[in-house]
Length: 502
Image 1: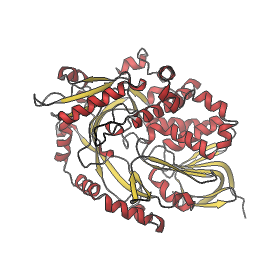
Image 2: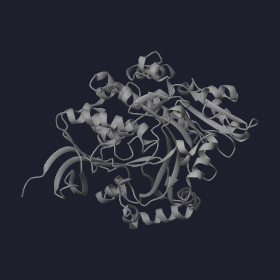
Image 3: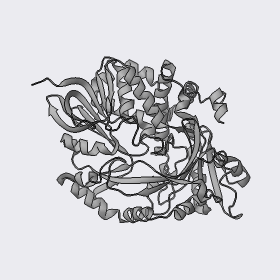
Image 4: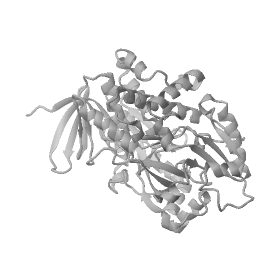
C-alpha cells in the first residue's frame, strides 16, 4: 500500500484565519511543511470576501454593542478596549509584513475611513454622551470627538443630514483614525506569500471529507471537487478554519472538546450603492443602535467600502435564515450537524430565543421598500434606483452547553483545541477577521506552548513588540506602536496615500 504524503500542518479553508496562521507559522519556523486545502476555486471566497462581510476593521471605535449598558445605567467599556488592542496587534503583523518588502502596497487592503457612532432620541443621546466620556479617558480613544451640533454633523456625515425633522434630537461621535479593511485582498496577499514560500502549498477545489487519529497526529482525507479522486495526508497539526464548515469537521474529529457545540446559521444581506455622486458624499462608517429585540449582529451601519481602489456604500445588515453553513454550502448542513451531545443545547437555545426566530422570519419577509425605510433612518433622501441588494456571507453563531440554561447562543468567536494541541478549530463570527492575529496567537500559545515560550519567543517579540494587555495599560507604548503601524501601512496623516484618500 502506498505511503500517505506527510506534512507538518494542514489548514482547512483558504480564508483570513488559515492564511494568517499559515504565514505566521512560516515566519516562526520557515522549515515547517504546510498545506492549505480549499474547496472553492480561489481564496477568500466565503466570509473573507469583501462583499460577504462588513469589513470594518473593528476597533471598538464606533460599534455601540461593544459598550453595553447595564440596567443601572452603567456602561462597560472593557470589550471595546480589548477589541481595539486586538486590532492593534493585527496591525503590528501587517506592518511587519509590509516592512519586509515583499507584501506589496498596504493600500490594496487597508484605507483610512473615519468611524462614527450616531444615535437618536433623548435616551440614545444620553447613552452616547456617557459612552464618549468614559472612552475618552482611555488612551486608545483619546482622539474621539462628540457633538450634538447639527452643523458639525453636517460636516461629518453630509449625506445623512438633509431631510431630517428640525427638532430631532441626535448626537454623534467621530474618530478620524478609523480604517476600512478589505479582508479578501489581505487574504489573497497572505496566500501569495505562502505560495512563494518553500514547503508551502495552497490547493484549491479540494475538500476535506474525513479526519482520523493517527498516533500523535491526524490523517486527513481530501477529495478533488472536480475529478472526484481522493488522497490522504498525514499531519502533526490540523487547523479547521473553514468558517461555517469548521463545525462539522470539528464534530468529525471526535475530540472530547467538540462535544456539546452546535451551530445557528444566520444569513445576511446589504443594500449597496455604487453611484459616485452619492458615494462621494459619505466618507465614513456610521454605526447606530440595534432595534429593540434585535440581536447584536443586526446593528445598522452605513459604511464606506474601498474594494480594488473603488469606493461604494453598504447599508445593513438585514438578517435572514437558511440551514446552510456556508454561502456555497448545502441545505443539509444544519440538520446533519445535530448530535446526541448537542441536541439538548440546541433545543434550549430554540426555546429561549423565540424573539430572535421571529426577528429573522420578519427580516426574510421584508420587501425592498421596507429595507429602504430602514436606510432612510440614516439617509432620509435615499432613492430606490441608487441601491441594490447584495447577499452577504453566512455566519454560524455558536451554540454551547450551559449548566443553568442547558444551552446558550453565543455571538462572537471561540477557539476549540484538542488537549494534546494536535487539532484546533475556530467557530463563530464577528469581530473575527479584525482580531484574527490575536486569535491565531492564542492558538499558537495553546497548541505549540513549548515553541512559543522557547525557540519562537524572540521572533514573536520581534513581530509583536506589545501585546493586548500592555497596549491597554501603557499609553506611551500604545501611541508609539500605533504610530509605527500607521507609518508602515501608509496610514500616517502626512503620507501621500492618506492624503489621496482624505
